[in-house]
Amino acid sequence: MLFSFHLPTKIFFGNFSLKTYGEELQRFGKKALIVSGKSSAVKSGALDELKEVLEKNGQTYLLFDEVEPNPSLLTVENGRLAADDCDFVIGVGGGSPLDAAKAIAVLATNELKTEELYTKKYTNPPLPIVALPLTAGTGSEVTPYAVLTYDEEETKKAFQSEDIFPKLAFLDPRYTYSLPYRVTLDTALDTLSHAIESYISTRANPLSDLAALKAMELIGKNYDYLRNGDFTPNVREDLLFASLLGGIAIAQTSTALIHTLGYNLTYYKNVPHGRANGLFLADYLKMAYPENKIRVENVLNTLNIAFLDEIELWFEPLLLWEEKVSKEEIIKWAEKSANNTKAKNNTPFTFSAVELEKILQERLL
Ligand SMILES: [Fe+2]
Image (cartoon, rainbow, N blue to C red; front, top):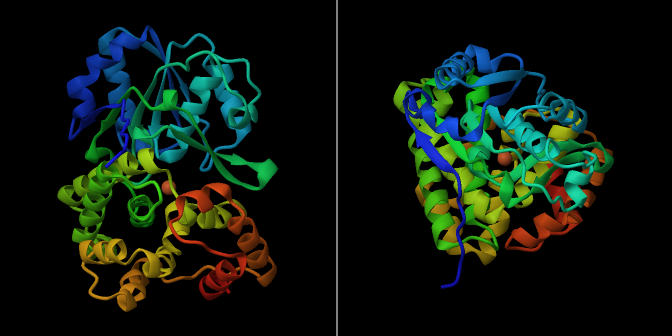
């Protein structure tokens, strides 16, 4: 056995975790840049509680609430300007504000063009990053990735660096109570794709496996609630914990073919990220099966699915497979995804553009 595991984020999980451990923020300096979208930080109650904690700590803040879903490079550039005299950055929201906060933290201390986040080594450490996730899906609060919209390559693309792991993550299930049904479901599908892609990956290791399997178990346990929308506080807590575990898993292994396929639907068709991944989970497991029988069977057992043939039935109520795109788009996406280096390296089976075209046709034509 030879593997490594790196998780430098200090995690606080549970109701009122921010209020309880808010003095932990004191060590990062006098002024925070709060990075969020327009509404969820307010609606969830997180922004008010955060402001209260900062005031109690004697810290000031500036609010940059301009992060849109799937943030652009222009947005993070604007965030850099806002970060001017701030000592640390607090991302509050779903994956988009958290990832934007990571990019802003790097840009604030380095003379980089935004595109160079992908291409250039930077020298100065980023501003310290704190994460308050408000959805249960992304796991970004414990990963070294920031996914931004990269128009030059017509996709969403992650940049990665160990120093953008958040220093602190506060996960409070109460902040997810106000999420609508579809957002809850779609983000749970993101969690599930993180768990499955991490577990069935060339980079899986014994510790990432533990996290991934537990995340799957929690999603399986709450399957009926994901179908009927009965999200009690206990269910919300399970889903947020699953999301954290999915993040811990992909922080070690990264994602694989599913995310690559899903990015097409999000970039070109605005399909929510988690749902875009979810559409291909059944296919991923079927494709993986011949060379990864035991692992695929473990996934099925963990999700309480009796046979591989029943997998579509399991996903059907969660997905309904409603999206339709053109044949031309399918050909283009299949080609592009088949050539994606990360997908090829991390996916533990080979796939061709022709095979991907078949899957995309079946799901999207
Ligand atoms: Fe994801």
